[in-house]
Each structure stands twice: as C-alpha cells, then as structure tokens.
Length: 245
Image 1 (spheres, rainbow, N blue to C red):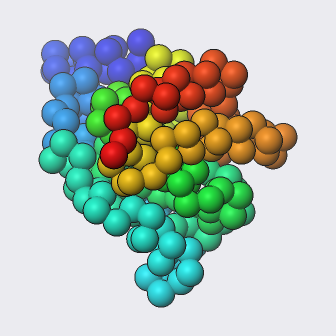
Image 2: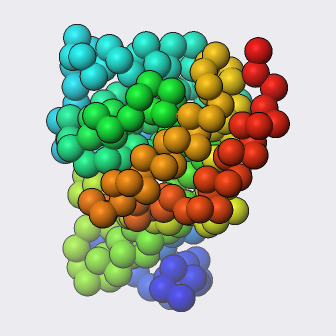
C-alpha cells in the first residue's frame, strides 16, 4: 500500500530530498491515519470552500436560497456540529453533506421536489453527518490525496496540500458511494427530521419515488445514493411507525 510504504520510509529516516518534501508527505499520510474528527472537519471545511468557489452559489436573496432557508428553519446543528446550508445553481439533481456540517443542495433537486420531499433528502444527508458516514468517506478521500501528494513529492514536486488537492478531495468525496447499511440508516433519520420539522413523514417515501422517476438522468444522487425498492419499503415502514405530533 502506497501510504503505508511512504509512512515507513519517512519515519525510519531512510528517505530525504533536498527540500524535505517526501518526509512532509509521509507525515501527512501518517496524519491521515491518525487524524481526529475535529481535524478531519477542518480539512472538510477547506475542501468545501474550494468546491463553493468552483460552483455558482445562490445569493441570500435568491428565490432558491430563501426557499431552502424556510425549509431548514430551526436546523442549526447536529450533535454539536453546526450546519450551514447553501444552494448551488446547477440543474443536476443532487445534494450532499460533509462532516464539518456543510450541506449543499442543487437547484435541480429543488426543481423536482416539493418542500417536504426536499426536507427528506436534506434530513437523509444530515443523517450521514450524525452517524459519521461522511467522516469515514472523507477520511478515505484524504488518505488518497495524501498518498498522491507523497508520490508527487517523490517525483520532486510539491510536498504539501495545495488548492488543487482540496478540489480533488471534494471530487473524490462526492463520487464515493455509501454502503447500503449507511443509506438505510440515513433514510430512517430523514423520517425523524421530517417529524422534527412538522412535516409528513411519508415524504421520505415520495422523495425516493421522485428520484427513481428521474434516475435516467444519471449522476448526482442517482450514482452516490441510488433509490431502490428496498429503501422505499423501509422509509414507508419508518413513516408508519414514526411518532410525529
């Protein structure tokens, strides 16, 4: 494994270059294996900033932003992690959350969903934060970037995370697929969030049906969070057993 081999060489002191770049890269890889939740959240914030800079963010007075603010009113944190919501003006049907509390919703998703259905998707994404699914996915992306950085340093180039590295971190994070277990757990939490927001818990089922209807578009939620009959059954059962009121 590249990360482990570079870590071994760096810590043993057997490798050095004139700028100390490979040593720094190896230590970054080591940090990736031992990094704390708070440190990973800081790295995620940096990646989110890069992604925001490369995307078209809706201003606060935009109709999409105002709608999202209304739908998410009262959702300020999850288990101590502050939540921040913004809209990407993009026709892709997508949404994502990062371990630092970043939640981004694409206008394309808002176009095909009613408020309660949209809230079900957002609640699902927050569930990935709550159960630290996003933390694990981001750590994997970080390790990959650290390994590539180390390889680059070995070739005599940069030995520290650069702006482009954070862009790649975000790209890898978005393309990662959650396990079926993680998806189902987040689905159930989405039902809980609907109840917390005073919305119809069955909207979680309808949101999955909407995603299935648009699955031919590909990409976005369809590739990273594929809707399935099993998931629809689960959220229907969760809605039936929900204590909203």
